[in-house]
Length: 370
Image 1 (cartoon, rainbow, N blue to C red):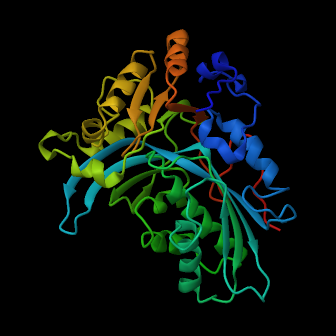
Image 2: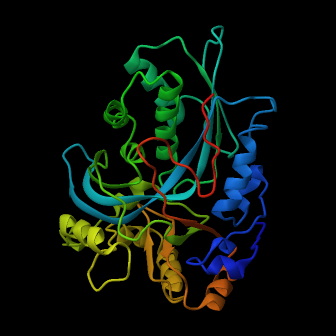
Image 3: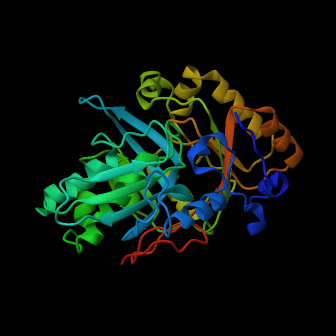
């Protein structure tokens, strides 16, 4: 693995100013081999909105729309019960963050016979198994506009099997973007309704960035941004190894799940935000089974706790671990990351969108419609 840490001292000061981010830009084709920060991603992907696509050999594409596709974290995640259909009912507070991917979209001419999807990340399918392609098909099916095809380029930075909702966010961006380029034949409420046909987490990304999700995750209740949460700094620590969601759920021990009432936990967050608290609010019922399947992940979390972050918790079904606030021992954190060739660290912050537009990455204005 290529191991790169740039301005590590400033990276550690996650609650400080923009000096927490460097200007070094990774090679897009080998991004998984680098330890990078959100604004490095922003600078790199922003340049691709006006020039070449990441994966296509055609450097002259003038994209009609370029959308930021944020990742998410779960501030709490309670597993309620296993359903008769094999899925689980859950209750979770989702929050978008300023680390994510980019989706570039262009309407093709009337002679086009199919969509075209390219992607920079090795191993990501570009056929109709990709949620982006499925989202485009869904919009055509529901609106009846079946004679318009699209060229799309997905610039991915969010790793898979991370618990960050990368693929779901991509699908939501595709739903929103294609609908915009078709002249908004569907309302946002209709997109939200349709999104549940594609997957559990996609619905959330059609919120404004903070939402309480129940059912399989597809029942979304938007909530206002948490108190004093705008721009909250955090870092995502992602081991190279991943975990499949089914393997984590298979290891669930139902008698060891939290007994906390998710409605009460939500109220605590809405009152206190993400500040440290004596109340039990940072809960993830999937941590215990994930640690059972992958004991090294629990060791990594404990190492990060010992670095003095305000909050350390696994996101979703893992394997990403988020650390909110600044570390009280920057040297220890630096030494920990230096000693691990198998982790990547992404510094980022909480983001939300207003109801009049899509998400933008911090300090990025690349979203456009021509």
